[in-house]
Each structure stands twice: as C-alpha cells, then as structure tokens.
Image (cartoon, helix red, strand yellow):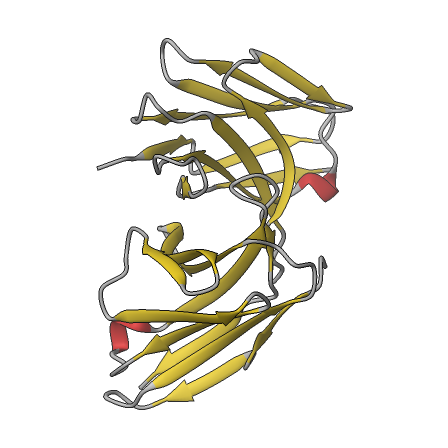
Length: 111
Length: 113
C-alpha cells in the first residue's frame, strides 16, 4: 500500500461546516495529490503539491484549499462544505506523475 | 482545457477473449500515459504505463500502444480472466512540468466465465 494513509476514512458533515482531510505518507515522496471520484466523472485532480509549502491547482479546485507543512502530510480543507462536495476523496503520492500510489480513500457525505 | 476521452464506458467479454480500451488526449505536450485498475471498493493501482518515446509496451497479458500523431493510446488485455473485472482508467500528463495527471472517466470491464 506504499505507506499512504488517509484520515478520516468516513465522515458525515453538515452543509456550511469546515472539513479537513489528512493524507500521510511514509516514503518521502516529493509530490502529493488530492483527487475526488464521482460516478461518471472518474478521478479529478483538486490540488497537488510539489514540495513543502509548494502547491498548485488542479481541474476542480474551487471550494478547496490545501496545505503541506511537512513532506509527509498533505491536508485538504473544505472551508464551507456543500452537498456538491459529497464524494470519495483519494490522496496520492509519488516522485511525479510516474507511479502515483493512492491512499485508501475517504468517503465524505455532506448533508 | 486539457481533456482525456475514454471509450467504451462499459465492456463485457467472455473469459479468454481480448479486451481493448481506447483513449484520446488533447494536449500534444503530454508525455506520460499510465493505466490504472480499480477493483470495487479499492484504491486505483497502476498496471502499466508508456512514455511518449515508445510505441508499445507489454507486460504478460497486458499491453499498451501509443500513437502520438493521432494522440491515441490503448490498453489491450488478452486471455481475459474473471479477476480482470474492474474499472480501468487511462491518464495523461497535462501540466508543463509533466508532474500531474488528467484521467479519463473510466471503463467498467466485466469478464464472465
């Protein structure tokens, strides 16, 4: 499983509340990524990081922010959750686009 | 913007048959094309990849071909088995540094015995 964990694994929250998802990796990968997966849409990149404190936007970054203060941790924050953000969120890590290793996923439900 | 189209969205084959999944990409600068397999309830896992300077790559029953001129790449699975049943995603690099991927929407492959 390439040493990538996500927490929490499941979360139910109410519209308008802030939510933070955590990704942790133990392999010292330089790059880390956050994706969301929805039926009919495949995997869509939200944000990614190419080093500590270095991040960039992906395809669907609106409504999300990220932070990376340590190599091993990449946080995804929904400042004010909406029902459209109900999804399965996957973190990935690697040395670049090559061989991205995915975490187990977090199922987020916004009611 | 950059886009990866994947076809078909569903594919049903009999055990032992071959399966082919095709993708097209829009960014001519894309230089890396991986394929991921995702079993139900599991995380996506890399099964094979190809770089833009190679036309074909094989790994046992799996092969990937790339046509850079047409901006097409395909996954070929021979002698399919029930355990090949899963969702398959193609992807292509899209940012200037080639460090981020854009994915196709996936193909659900069902192999019946």
